[in-house]
Image 1 (cartoon, rainbow, N blue to C red):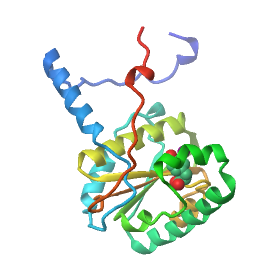
Image 2 (image 1 turned 120 degrees about the vertical axis):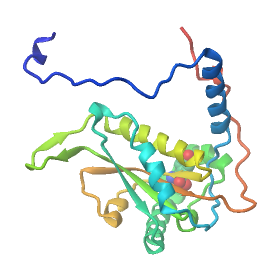
Image 3 (image 1 turned 180 degrees about the vertical axis):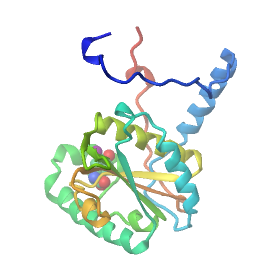
Image 4 (image 1 turned 90 degrees about the vertical axis):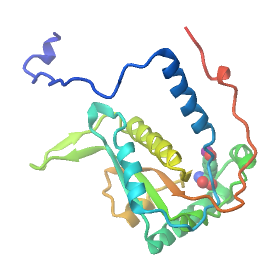
Amino acid sequence: MHDDLVGLPPAVTESLTGYPERDDAAVALAAETFRAAMATRRTVRDFSDRPVPRAVIETCLAAAHRAPSGANQQPWHFAVIGKGSIRKRIRAAAEEEEQVFYRERAPREWLQALAPLGTDWKKPFLETAPWLIAVFGARHSTGPDGARHKHYYVPESVCLASGFLLCALHHAGLATLTHTPSPMGFLNGILERPEHEKPYLLIAAGHPARNCEVPAITHKPLDAVTSWF
Ligand code: IYR
């Protein structure tokens, strides 16, 4: 054992559950079923105002909350907004930032990259979608004695949980949009989150609008983003 580990409490273990033995065919079928399900996910910008029960969102958040995280610290916070008045405030603040982005801040090259997606500063979905989830990452936590505990790998952990959340919402049949207004500091103000929490992502979730259109885009072939050794 490395000398620095001397004196630290030993890890407590328990038996692994949840991995019943499957033959290769069953593993391949499960992999293919999930691949096909994820291939239907699209980023949606045109939502129906059809309500989604809060319990569904809670269940999806419980799935996200099982994502791996640095030192198992779960350094995320999900601020879940169903109230129309708060969605309205978030939309107004986001659109204010986005107007500056599209009119002044974004270099031509960035606007060119976004052109196939057809995005602009208008974000009506922030009010139409029944739920918004703002995902924050906490740089530290505070113990009951007031002591600060630093968190590790915060961006990585928050992004993993966000990925789990997108999968869970999609699996439930809900459409999602990952919105990253920049800068996003206004979310701390509106959602009353402390300064040591950084907003990473605003996720809109709900049913897609009837006759919803999405950009006709393609993906790089898998072998363009894969190397095997
Ligand atoms: N935040 C802006 C711009 C934007 C940037 C990227 I990179 C995108 O993939 C999509 C949009 C917006 O939300 O419109």
